[in-house]
Image (spheres, rainbow, N blue to C red):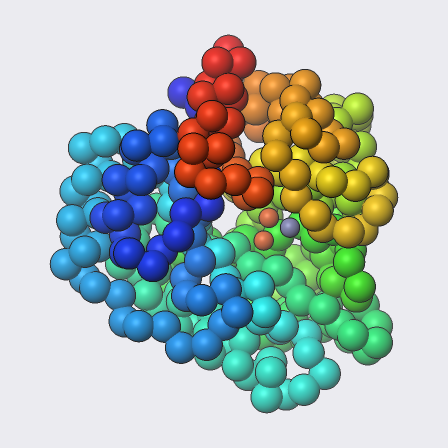
Length: 276
Ligand code: FE
Ligand code: FE
Ligand code: ZN
């Protein structure tokens, strides 16, 4: 069965997300752990989580993917900002212990003129500090489009982070189709070759989730502007091939396309109809 869902607003709690997922035909979903711009989050309501877990079990909803605020920068030049990233991540991971089966996805960060080597060292250092703590949620590095000084613009940079941490078994990768395409990988025309390269550099066993997005820009543009499936430079056929690929078909897929719920519902139905 295709594992397919989309990004949902977490502002009304977990049960509400589960109900929305069900309503639009999704069986997984992604959510921000707190305001995507960062900052303090209300404590999660454990009663709501209990109700969500029962609802999810009864309705076949699984694989909740928590997304860190995208303003976190684990490789900022400023120590304060790095410490802030550490505090937020640790607090998020502490909360996620209440959501079994969840994964935590984050953007590795932007090195801003410090250079990629310094950036990778800082990211690995932050992860080493995080991994001092015993929690069970896998932490996923997201493949980035390479906008500005983003670290993780290619498979090599992600692998260098993985190699630099002391406990790499707690790390996985979330592949964003718009980002890798913008990063210069032809995931639309050369899917097999791109996956072979991922396997050679990182190892496909690390791949735990896929963000399904079309791109408003041509390959290699480093822009990171998501488009609705089939309306951008990847095209609908690319997504049919991706969800059906033997190396990917069991993974959970999450839409982050510019859509309202009705738009997501239509994309989910379309993907289900072409999944064999
Ligand atoms: Fe992301
Ligand atoms: Fe993404
Ligand atoms: Zn993006």
